[in-house]
Structure formats: C-alpha cells, structure tokens
Length: 429
Image 1: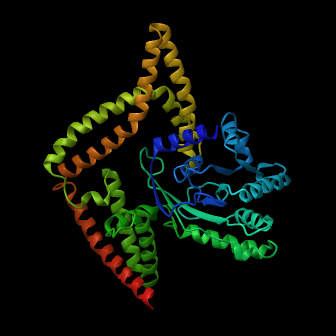
Image 2 (image 1 turned 90 degrees about the vertical axis):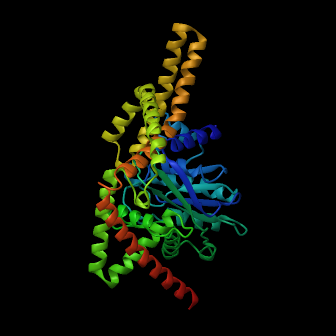
Image 3 (image 1 turned 30 degrees about the vertical axis):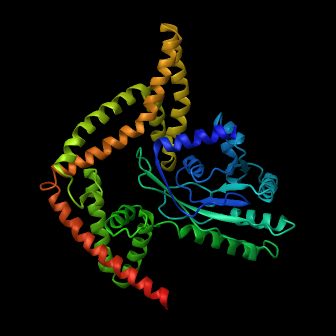
C-alpha cells in the first residue's frame, strides 16, 4: 500500500511542478529525521519522495488523519499523528506519538516533519516549535547504546508556487547531530539550544526575505550574476547576503538598487520574460521553429483542457476560492485527482456501453495520454513564446528594458565579485 501512495504523491507533485533537487545525498540507512520549511501544504510532503527511495514516516497533525478518504491514505502511509491544543483534542495522546517516534528511530527508520508547525506564505523561516528537538533528544536518551541519529534539513523553494510547470527546488543540507546535548535530561535550555541549531542549519539553505516584494528582486539579481557553478538558489542566498551588507554600509544605495530590481522584475514578469532571456536575442531561425511549436503546443493544450475540464476546473475553482494561499495547489491536485478517477471511470463506462470494450479502453488511453502530455505541452508553449517575444520585440519594445537590465547586470556583477573577494580573504585569515 505504501508503494502505491508514494507513486500517487510523486505523480501529483511531478505533474504540477518540475522538481529540482540539489545538495547532499540523503543517508540510505539508519535513523534520520528529515525536516523542512513548510510553504506548500501536502506538496511539501510529496516532494520528499523525490529525494530518497527509503520508506518515510511522516509526522502530521491529527486533523489530517480525520479527513474523508485522504485521511485513510495518510494513515496507510504509516503517518504518526500529533495532537495540538488549537485543535481541541486531548494532547496527552502525544505520549503515544512520542513513543511511536522513539520506536521508529531506534529501529533505524526515517521520520519527516515540518518544525514550523503551520504552513504559510512568508518568505522567511518562521520560528521553530520545540517538538523536533524534543523528539530527537528523546530518541537519543531512549537508546541503550549510542544512536547514529542524523537530522537532515531540506530547504524548499517555489519559483512561482501557483504556476503550472514552474520549478520546485529542494536543497538538502548537511546532517545535524545532537549527540553532545543528549547526555543529560532534556531541560528547556537544552531543548532551546537544539532547536536553535537545527533551525540555523535550515536557514543556511534558504534565501530569506523580509517581504514578498523582495523575492522577485533577488531572483532577478541572481539570474544576472555569473553562475560560477552555483545553482539559482545559491546565487539568491548570496544576493540576499550582499544586499544586507549594502544596506548596512550604504542604506540609500541599497534602497535604490532594491527598487530598480523590483521595478525591472515586475516589468519582465508582465512581458512573460526573465533576466536571463535578455542576454542575447534568439536567431530568426530559432523564431521560425518556435512559431509552429507554439501553434502545435497551443492546440495540444486546448485539447488537454477539453478532455480533462470536468475533473480539473471544478477542483481548481474551489481551491482558489476557499483554500489558503499556500494550499491552493494541494487542494487543486487532490480534488482533481479524485474527480479525475470518477471522470475517467465514467467516460470509459459510457464509451463501453455505446461501442464495446475496445471503445472503453480507447477512452482511458486518450485520457491517460492527455494527462501525460499536458506538462510537455505547457513547457513547449512557454519556451516558444519566450523565443518569439524576445526575437520580435528585441529592438523595439524590449530596448528600454534591456538597457536597464544591462545596467543592473553590471552593478550586481561588480557587487558579486567584490563579495567573492571578501569571502576569499576571510577564508584565508
């Protein structure tokens, strides 16, 4: 059953996002607590199945396990519930949950949890609850012999959370150990030190911002600076650090740079472009290839929408109307997947009653092919439109934007190189 649930979770997340994993390799065996920031509802859980083939046991609030149908799947995956005061349940039941977590870790299993507790859309790591540290210290204390327990942080970043086929980044950090804190009782001061340590490890993986307005600005700057083998997320972290230092040294200059980055990022978004799209124009040959690609992928998108509209659009509409901002995609995927099963079964039954078993099989084949091709059609559509826009408007509408972007590229590159020199000097002293 677990394998089917894992396949379902991966399919749902992978159907909406392009998942990119970076960083350290996860331990293939041994006790592990995998923890991450929490900004995407159940998508954050499905993402973990892209990082390892190990069986994972999730820690989730009890109310999730009570949900119709979804709760059955969550229970079947071996999820361990936690009971919160805000849910008006008996929190003394957490004793059995902690006992189950101890047993799982002592057996060398892998636990997944989200120490912020609640989901949210803030562009920074929210204060950790103490549960993660208490779970780890409890397992270390319960072990009769030294327990090789690794706490592995995963930084999750959505490039454009609500956008279909956008990139979802998962950055795996170095394992944190709490062996030195496990000698005595888990006093509040010890738990606080452990919590601070594991939170610092996660924050080191993420480009944190004071407000959402700053996210687009730092992403544009990261797209403009030389990569030097770094991922976009690593460059964004460097940009955030550099801007923070500039604000300390020259607040007025930092404010002007931030404002110009935000203005350019907003204008580029309105054009459907990114900073990296303006480095050099596509050739006319590439534009000639992009034109029929846009037509074909656009026609395929219309066909996919027509085939799956009865399952997708009601779920999407309800999700956008009633779901919290960080859970819109989660509600869309779960709702459309359950509705999709009913729609496919109904379509196959109708086709079978009208024209026999071959027609029913054909209906299922068409629906399956449409679902599989949807992502490829969207990616081809987006890429071809970028090529056409940049080629057709390079010397006209894009000229003033390119001039500002080029000026920003020169400025952030100078600051990036200066920061790199400073870091090298610090490393040698």
